[in-house]
Amino acid sequence: MRRFQGLLLALLLSPLYAAYGAVVIVRAIVRLYRFCGRARVSLAREVHCQNGHPNATTGRWECASCRAQYHGWVGRCRVCGAGASWFPCSTCQVGIPLPWERT
Image 1: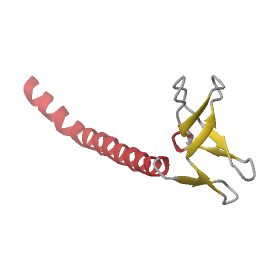
Image 2: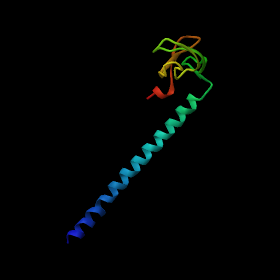
Image 3: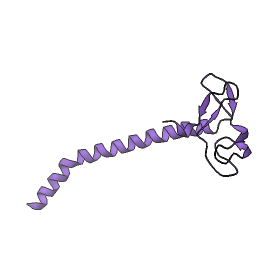
Image 4: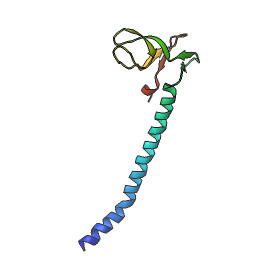
């Protein structure tokens, strides 16, 4: 009798487990889609500010953490390794958030 109750309980709860599994899978797919979009923007040669001005992602930068000037990609200081979350537009000085900081 006890075994039958356990099987019945498992049978009744199985749709809930299936729904939970579907939610977990959908959330993982959405996160992967967002990650791929951010990676595409991160690997681009230039990004545009809100006013539409193109800005190169490689060049000469000053680190906000250690104030060192380095040549390379805007997202990571080559001297201290600090990560950047934004950088100013070279034309209008509007802040351009880097893709991994967007919500």
